[in-house]
Amino acid sequence: MRIEVESVEALRFEDGSPVRAASAVARFGDGLLVSQDDATSACWWRSGVGTPVRLLPPVDGHDTFSAAEHTKELKPDLEAALSVTLDDAPAVLLLGSGSTGSRMRAVVAGLRDGVPWAVSRDLSPLYTRVGDLLGLDPDQLNLEGACVLDGALRWFHRGRPSAGLPSSSVDLDLAALVAAVAGRAEPAGLHATGVLTYDLGEVEGVGLAITDAVTLPDGGALVSAAAEDSPNAYDDGPVRGSALAVLDGTRVRATGPLPAIGGRVAKVEGLALLAWDQHGGRVLAVVDEDDPTAASALLTLRVSL
Image (tube, rainbow, N blue to C red; front, side, top):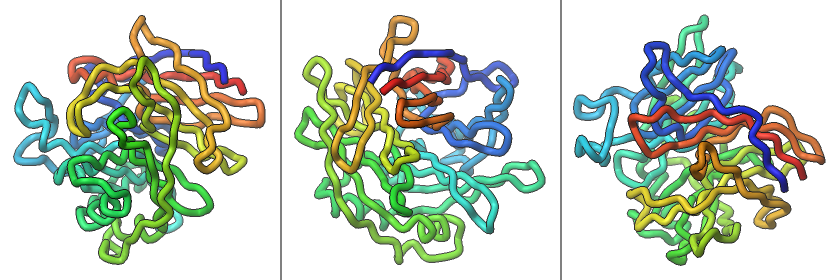
């Protein structure tokens, strides 16, 4: 697989403030909804300008979170986003990583007469069941990507391969999950199945772990992966490299390294498909800079198989 960078845009809100820690991206109306993993709002990106969209109420009075402010443990960490349908209208489902109790929430966001709305739900029991199914201690769970395969939501646990914790996934009933987050059903009825594990290789001795996934037209999945030398599922670490891979089930059909951006490894945490065929295609990707003062990057990538 060969990956070329067609363009790089710095994501900023209309007041010039940076879009922080971009962790997921999905189509939203006439633009894109970009999740910030350390904030209660997302960015509605349209025509080169970002508009804040509140996804969650303040947490203990805070809308942004950082280690420097001693609030990192409160952040919602919405790490996965995908397009769904609610009441026959398009919407976006966003899912927390589950790596702490405050990260076990999910959000459904949509537009009503062009105005954004969002509802959220605590899904702690589901996250506990997923962790148990994957055989993980509570502090090891780190669900960072999701896509729709064979009509089900495939939810990817990032893992730490170098610590003997491979990337893995479970499947859920997508319609039931959306209904529960929207308040139409009880989360107690949600159950995960179908555990799969993945081996994407390593960079400089650090295993590549899945950070996001999108569905391909042929039924496969395109995933992003980062070789991040983290001590646990909570703390960041140096990123040794990053890559994209095409998966058929657990089989890696193709893989390729992501080019550096500005001389630095691009830790891609969100993907959205622009076009794809048997030869490859074009993909949007958002980069988490792991720096709340830095604007996250939106990349347009050309992938050749």
